[in-house]
Structure formats: C-alpha cells, structure tokens
Image 1 (cartoon, one colour):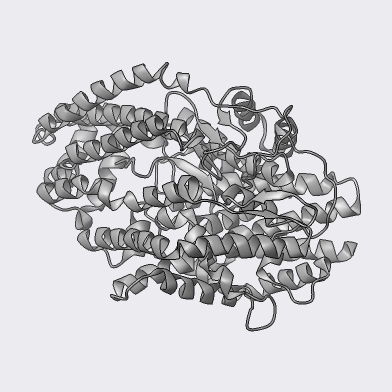
Image 2 (cartoon, rainbow, N blue to C red):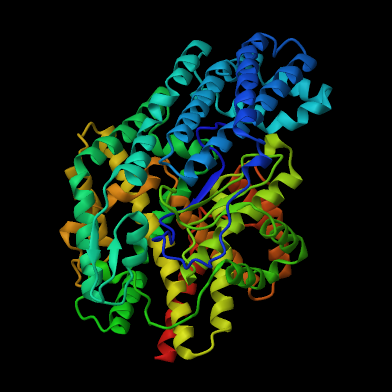
Amino acid sequence: MRSFNTLLVIGFLLSSASLFAQSDDTVRYEWDLTEIYASVDDWDLAMTEISARIAALPNYQGSLGNSAASMLAAMAEYSATNKEVARAYVYTSLERDADQRQAQAQARFGRARQLLSDMEEATSWIRPEVLEVGETKINQFLAQEPRLADFEFMLQDILRQAPHTLDAKTEAILAQASMVLSSAEQIYENFANADIPWPTVTLSEGTEATLSQAGYGRWRGTANRDDRKLVFDTFWATWEQYADGMGATLAAEVQSNLFSARVRNHDGVLANNLFDDGLPPEIYTQLVTQVNAALPVFHRYLKLRGTMLGVDDLRYYDIYPPLVQVNTGVFDLERSKEITFAALAPFGETYLSLLQQGLSQDWMHSHPQPGKRSGAYMNGSVYDVHPYVLLNHNDDYNSASTFAHEWGHAVHTLLAQSNNTWENAEYSTFIAEIASTINEILLEEYMIENARSDEEKLFYLGGALESIRGTFFRQTMFAEFELAIHQAAERGEPLTGPRFTEMYGELLKRYHGHDQGVLTIDDAYTVEWAFIPHFYYDFYVFQYATSITGAAWFAEQFLAGDVAVRDAFIRVLSAGGSDYPHEILLKEAGLDMTQPEAYAPVLRRMNNLMDRIEELL
C-alpha cells in the first residue's frame, strides 16, 4: 500500500542551487498551485472533507473477507481517500518549499503531515485483515470481481509481507507513532534551510559571498584556489558549530529506522528498507563491491584532475572547479529547454511530446529566492493534475543538467500515470533515478558533440566525469556511511556528532586515496555528513549509484543505435509501479543488477571519457 510519509518526491542531491544572483531580466517561473486547489480556503475545506472520510474508513474493518464486492468497496474507498490525502499534502509541501520562512505555510504543512498520520492510523487494520482473509480467498475474489484487478499487486504485496506484518492493535500503535518516528528529517530541514545563520566571506576579487547551502553550491567551484579554501574552511566551520545537534538529530533518525526494522522482524535496517521494493540485497552488496574494486579508476580521474588544474597536492576543495575554464555562455531557462529537447531527441515522438507538454506549462518553480528549499526535485503525487518541478536554476551548465534530470522524472511520471491506474502508477526510486540520469548522459554527449572548441569539449567531458564521480562513487560512499552508522546502532554503539565525523572521515579518505597520496582530506571537512539531507531519506542514496549504472547500461546500447533498447526503456518507464522495480528491469529490458556485468558500462564510460580528454591534451 502507498505510504505518504515517502511521497513520490524525486530529488537531485546537492544540485546546483545558488545565490540569488540572476539579472533582473532573467525569465523566472513559479508553479501554479491553483490547479491543485483554487485557493487556501478550498484546501481548508478539502482538509475537513478528507478528515471525515478518514474517520469513516475504520467502518470497513471486518468486511474484507465477506465477499468480493465488500473487498472492492473497502479498497476503492481506501484508495480514493489516499489520493485526496496526497493531493492535500502535496499542496502544502509545494507551498512551504517555495518559502520555508512563512509561518502560515509551515502550519498548513504541519496539518497535512498530521493528516498522513491520521490516514495511516485509520487504515492500519487493512494489512492484518488481508492476511487473515488469506491468499486462497483473495485469489477467489480476484477471479470473481474484475474491478479488483486494480488492487491485485497491492494485495499480493500485502501477502508477501506477512512475516513482517503485526496484529491490528500493534499496527495501530505504530501508525500513531509515525510522526514522531519521522520528526528528525523535519528538524534537519528547519535548521539547514531556515535557522542556521550563514557567514559571509570576501573573495579575492572583492565579491561578498554569503555561504548558505546555495552559496556554497555556487562558490565551492570558483577558479581561485585560495577562494575555494576560504569557502570550504568557512562553510564547514559553520556546520561544525552544529555538529553535536546535527549528530543528535541523525542519531534519532538512525534509532527510528532501527526500531522499525526490529519491530517488523527484519534482519536489519538494510533488509527492512530493501524489502518494500522487493529488491534483492545482492544489488546493494554488488554495488559496493564493484565500486570499491573500481577505486583505481576513480583515482585515475583524481590524478587527471590534479594535472589539468595544475595542482600537485590535490585537496578536497579542488573537487568542484571545472577541469578547464571556458565561457560556455548563459544557460538560462530558455536555453536549458532548447538543449534538453535537442539532446533527448533520440527518445522519439512519444517522449518528446510529453516533454513539450510539460515545458509549455507552469509546472516548475525555477530560481532561488530567500527561504526557498535548496536543491531540486520532482513531485508527481497529484495523480490527476501533473508533476511539479522545483529547481534552483543559476543559469549555468550545471543548472541545465539538473533541469534535464528533473524533467526526466516528470516525463517518467507522465508515462507511468498515462499507462496505469492511481493504484499502480507510483514507481520506485530505483527506476526513477535511471529515468533522470540517462537524460544527463544524453545531454553530456550532445554538448560534447556540439562543442565549439577543444576547450569547450574538455569542459563538457570533465562535466561528464564529474557526474560519474558524484553519482557512482560519491553516492556509494554515502551509502556505505549510511549502512555503517545503522550497523553501529545495531551493535549498541553510541552515535554522536564526533563519532559520525570519525566514521565519515574514514570513508572520505579511503575513497579519495588519502593514504596513497592521491587527494588529501583535511579533518576540518569531515563534518560534511551533517550537511547531507538524504541521510534522512532511509537508504535512498545508493539508488543514485545504481541509477547511473542502469542509465549507462541503457545509454551504451542506445547511443549505438539500438532502437529495441530504446523501446524497452520506454516500456520500463511506462510500467510505473505495476511490479517490483528489479523485476520490471529484468522483464522489460533484461538488466540484472545483481550481476557484476551490469556495472561494466559505467566504468567503460568513465575510462572512455578520460581517454578522450587525454587525446585532446
């Protein structure tokens, strides 16, 4: 069953959010929330109506096994109410994220979060009762009532979860505790986006740079090395002031996840989080194994980066500047639209028509502004409206790449929703990030092919390498950290800010070849863990790494002209949530990510990009 504590919000980790530095004539877009509710008053009225529907849902308790008709009536009302809950929640979430300083928007968001909890509590009896009805009778009902087909995957999944489903009374208690168990993320977001007083530094050319999260995203890649060091030193010193509090917050998140895994009789937190999507644990272990085996390839890139930057003693603050400095022009929204559409032309008319539909509407909130949530995401949970895209567009190439990424999510949503009912449209993050990351690869190859000079080609080749570094290696490092801190909690070890810093620092150094002299990690920067929002998303980040793996697998064949693979890819996106994600990839495309060969294309791509750079040097 859908759980709207984890709505279909697909985000881009630490995207190119930036300072509010666009010129006055920059074209900006703000999303039109009146398509969800015409006004706040209409939302308020809907909240009252939805609350009444939620309160009536327990009246269906005890009826599921009476007949196929009674099961259909209960499941249909459950689903319809769920859809309206999602609508009400998304409205407040989007409103809040546009400006998190607004107290009234915060209050409406809090009411909507409570609605999620109320819904979960009012329907906590469904899983135990479905199990009580049993597989034999459910299959009889499915055969007797064709309209139950919309709920077949949901019902079969509930049966699969029998070993981890508790009695109705205990499920109700867990539902009541859902807001408490999810509170750590809200604490993090309020601190990171609204409450931390960000410092301002003066850069070498006299620019006053405010080092908020957005400012850090902009200035960490500046060309002047002393400025980069100043940005790092100042930004991470600010986070260090909050390391104890952020440590307690992250520890609370870990304990919440540990509690959920134990109470549901899973072997551990990883097993608990993979189970819902039916993902084999071998995917996670295979990813970590292949990435660690490929660290010499990563170190080859770091050495190449040092050579091209002219830096003998590569440091962590040398990660973000482009390999070459070149004027690629302004990538405002109109140019971002134009090149994204051109780069994605190989997808064909079906895909492009949906992209054009979205780009011609007020579906996105485009530019940074005070109080706005950092990063970027797509929210596709309002089934009968359309997806919404949040950006922090800085009119540069990184912003264009994020633009293509998030619109990949949006088109995926349109394909899934047009080919599936509400009950089966919500897809897994595991496939979602493949849909967006392949857009980045196609954009990269388009920009490389259309570069106007060798210097510009080197710039785009370097950007493609950075994408692999940031998505394949960095996200797997995050995933190792996330698993390590949960395993430490499972062993009963205390988790504090200093302990998180120690564990994170060990991974940073191993991944970046600190002990081999490849790149030096200064201890002052090992507090970076406190900055990463996705550690509150419960084993989300490893799917970024599997996404670029899958995207490279598709793209390698796709760019070679294999139309059959392109069609298989569209079928994967169109499948929505009608099956478990790994099964969809296997069935529709033959991609098995439990096997080592699935990870070969992304490494071939990385080596090929470096070969192309070395040929130009």
